[in-house]
Image (cartoon, rainbow, N blue to C red; front, side, top):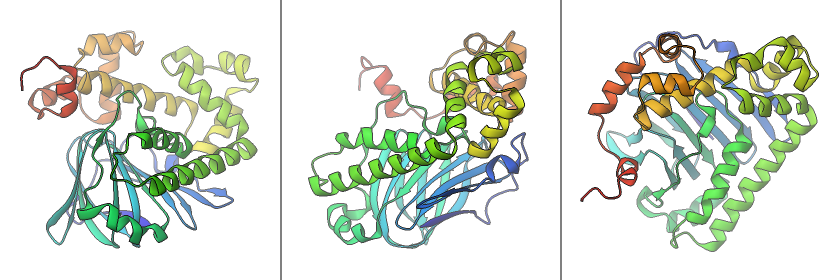
Length: 334
């Protein structure tokens, strides 16, 4: 229902350790397919069906990213940005500005929108709902600005960067629907909730049927991603009854990356969160992520994001304050 593609304004992005092959494994699925692709530091994943599309766009670029998003038809879209900001323009007119950590629901007409994403390590999720809801939603979601509902912090959407499980994202969305203000009708609200629940169940059934071993490994990665020794031969064999080669073969087939790569994504995502969002020191973040020395963490962070942690902390000093920052300091006078 929509496509991401680079704008002519985008500079050539430097290649990173993330190879194209990590994001090029389409998964056949009863009602659609899961596609992954990468372009330099830009990674996208979409889950396409006959009446819906769920997509994520992730970037490791530390500079504002400009690209085009082509909405292929009128539909209701849910947009969630984990941090940073997203601006959509049509013919030089700003139509939508989505701030970080907020859920945006809108009826959007078909067309190509110029998008600017201003945040390092951004994770953006867009879900396209059934097009038949567009006319109804247009009357309820006027002026393309309906829902700017503050979401609770603590859920790292999209597993840091390219690793995405649509069912996890859908669970996140459905758990937040109860926060919708009164303007959204109970009928549309129940439609959305039912729709997301069905999508989650369908994808979960697919994983359980075709990739049950990989799903168990996914849980293993989440439980042990800070333990470097957990991704060696003996621990993997002891806990999963597979050797490391077989485990990675299952994992790449299901999720497009090895266990070690996914663990690295989670560690770096947590490192970014601790540094940029929480303002922790490099030494403390290094210790939290179980690196033997801050220098080792600094090298790993630079290899992943292309920037040193100290530079990121410097950027944080000059970043504009957000509602999230104010929420952390409730006693601060307005």
